[in-house]
Amino acid sequence: MLSEIYDCIYIVRNDIIDTSELRYSLRSLDNLKHGGVWIAGGDPQGIKPDRSLSIKQLGASKWERTTYTLRKICEAKETPDMFYLFNDDFFIMQPAEIIPPIYNGTIYDRLKTIGASRYAQHMKHTADELARRGLGVNNYAVHIPMLIEKEKALEVIEEFTGWPMFRSLYGNYWNIGGEDMADVKIVEASVKPGKEAKYLSTSNISFKYGKVGEHIRQTFKEKCKYEV
Image (tube, rainbow, N blue to C red; front, side, top):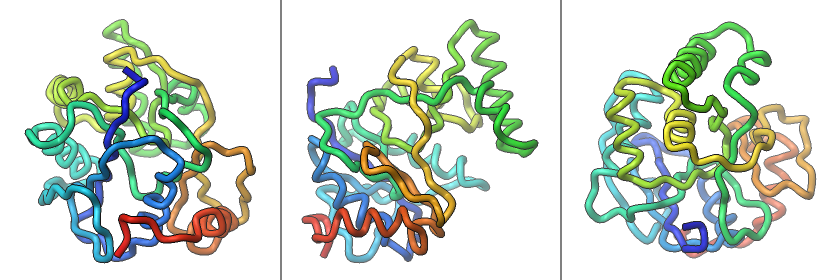
């Protein structure tokens, strides 16, 4: 399965204005062996993917809109059966033939490191339900592209209608295994990434004003074919 070449599908907000992270994420695809590039959701100015899928994103919250968009991607006949699911702040920093499944410990491990919040409640609810079903509780909520099989994704969306935490639900429901590694998202502007990092992810602040953003811009200076 992982010897094949897969398309990359980016979920992009309908109201996206700032495309700076997206542009550099697209540039970083030079490091990944991949097929076509899709933009699903909005229509960002100055970006020319191989294929576009216009989707009016419905839902009261960010995760509802994202899950709705993912459902529409997977229901579309023209999308490939398997694809890498990207966010616009994911960066491939080292040459890679494939991106394997990646998780960061268990969901319960992650809960020990964060305070009380609605997100934490969702995480615990997800872990408890997975455990109740006798499934794994790996934390796949990491900021790294994930290989998705769309029929399997639709089954998870149907099985857990209205649930957030899609990545952890998908990874554990289908027992995809993978590599255990720390999440790569850098939020603080002061944090400088290591040169050996395979993947990176940023916040708006760290990308615009931080050392990680400077590192990414220095690494990918040239425009790619997906930019006007």
